[in-house]
Length: 250
Ligand SMILES: NC(=O)c1ccc[n+]([C@@H]2O[C@H](COP(=O)([O-])OP(=O)(O)OC[C@H]3O[C@@H](n4cnc5c(N)ncnc54)[C@H](OP(=O)(O)O)[C@@H]3O)[C@@H](O)[C@H]2O)c1
Image (cartoon, rainbow, N blue to C red; front, side, top):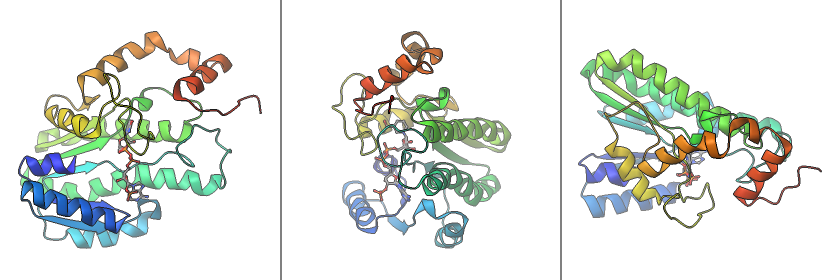
C-alpha cells in the first residue's frame, strides 16, 4: 500500500518492527516516487505501552491516510487448534494486540486531527476469514471479524464529519503470511492487490479489494458453505485445500 500511496503523491510514514526492512523500503519509495518518508520501529504485540512513542513520533505530521495493515496468524503460519502452539497464553495476547489493538489505537491517534480538518481516510485490512468462523484459524478469523465490524461502525459514525473508513477483506494474496503461493487469477500479487484496492476507496466502506476476490467471496457460501467447514470432513477439506499436513484425529 505504501509505495502505491507514494506514487499517488503522498509522503509516507512506515511503522513496523524490523528497522532494516523499514529503512530499505523507505529508501526505495524515495528513489522511485520522490516522496519524503519517515520510519517508526514498533512491535505491535507490545500492547498499550507502545502507543505513547508512536504518538510522539507522529506529532506535527498531517496524517491524511492511515492504513492499518499489520496482522499476524496464531502461533505461526500453519492452521492449528487453539492449544496446539508453544505458548497459547502469549499467542492469544499477541494476536489481539497486533490485529485488533493496533487498529483501534492508531485510529484513536490520527482521528482527532482528521476530524478537525474534516478530511481523512482510514483503511483497515480485514480478511475474507472475517465473514465466517473458521476452525483451525479461530483467533485470526475472529480478530478479522472485529476489524470489519469496527470499521463499518466507525465509518458510519464519522462519514458526516468527512472521514472515509474502509474495511478491505481480501481472499489470498501472495505474501509472507500465506508463504508466497503462485499468483494467478485467484491469488493476487501484493502490488496488484494494493493498486486495485486503493481504486475502491470512496466506492464502499466494505470491499474485498479486487474483482477476483469479490467474485470468490460471493461464490464461497455455495462452494464451501459455513456448515460444511464445521463438520470433521469439512475441516479435513480445509486442511487439504490449504496444503497443511496436520492430522485432526491426533
Ligand atoms: N496475504 C493474504 O492472503 C491476506 C488475506 C486476507 C487478509 N490479509 C491481511 O492483509 C494484511 C497484510 O497481510 P500480509 O499478507 O501482507 O502479511 P505479512 O506478509 O505477514 O506482512 C505483515 C506485515 O506486518 C508487519 N508485522 C507483523 N507482525 C508485526 C508486529 N508484531 N509488529 C510490527 N509489525 C509487524 C510485518 O513487518 P516485519 O516485516 O517487520 O515483520 C509485515 O510488514 C493483514 O492485515 C492480513 O490479515 C492478508
